[in-house]
Image (cartoon, rainbow, N blue to C red; front, side, top):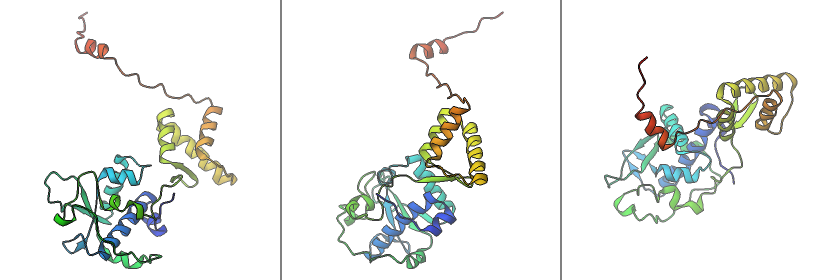
Length: 235
């Protein structure tokens, strides 16, 4: 499976932002063609955090919230709430500049499709379940699951978010950053190529005798109770 994004967006805003932004391009253009979800002079798409995580399973909800926040801070998207049900948690998204859609040049037109969303009649989204993306999931050709998405560290080192988090958990972020800098300098000076920077860093750590951090042991219920009732003795 593969995910699509615009190269210029990835360069200017970041790879993660470019992937979700392309997703919004697709659905807002589709809704525009279907003449639906038009509010306050903009075309919108709606989505819950749960649906976004199902579409991008390699990101946690926390990561998705961070990327959405970044897109808003860069003034690329805005969020809204056009749900008729007060307790509805679904968030609506629109582009700050819809003229961007005119420059995309899709390979094929976005077909007009009959809506099957049962909330369409009342213009309501459904909290944490059927959304624009989920209801037409079988039609989402541009957004397939990738094998890996690697993030750039310094000039030459590439690690997935999961690889970086795993190294940081096992060895500490300061140690990981030190080995990233060493690997980056070595690649830059020697032109060496490695199939996996993650395993290269792990091998270098093993070679240098770097030990994994001791996991923090959780207190048992009895220990927590004893700690709460502990009274230090006066000398």
